[in-house]
Image 1 (cartoon, one colour):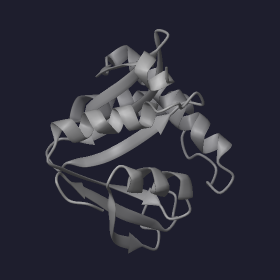
Image 2 (cartoon, helix red, strand yellow; image 1 turned 120 degrees about the horizontal axis):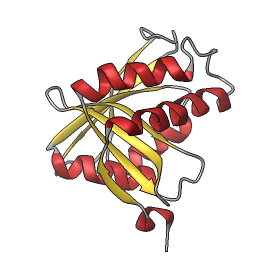
Image 3 (cartoon, helix red, strand yellow; image 1 turned 135 degrees about the vertical axis):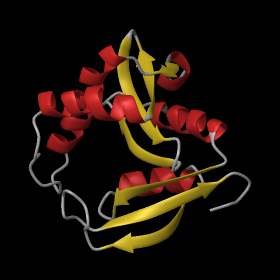
Length: 154
């Protein structure tokens, strides 16, 4: 049994926002090519509670009664604004993505050009490159916009 098959995918609750922020913050700290964080984990959690939680549909993967990953979608634009998984991985990202793809006919997102692992993951989920930027984002890192449409191969 994989971790993903042992996890529960469910809509996020307000009390999950601290765990989501910690997963995101830990990823930034563990990624050597990322610039230093511009916000503390507490500031990120506050942003999640007051902004993302209110404006977006957030799904969490719960494993052993703890948040193990999350995916955030802006339903109006069909943009995935965040997908982060804690260190246990094990298919949790795939399970979150499959849930989002089941709810939408198309999705798109930005990821950093340097994030080879994420780019390979999204390609396996059927996403294809749409465009690139030279870093018009908070981190000033070059990124790539990827898109998925139900019934189309990447």
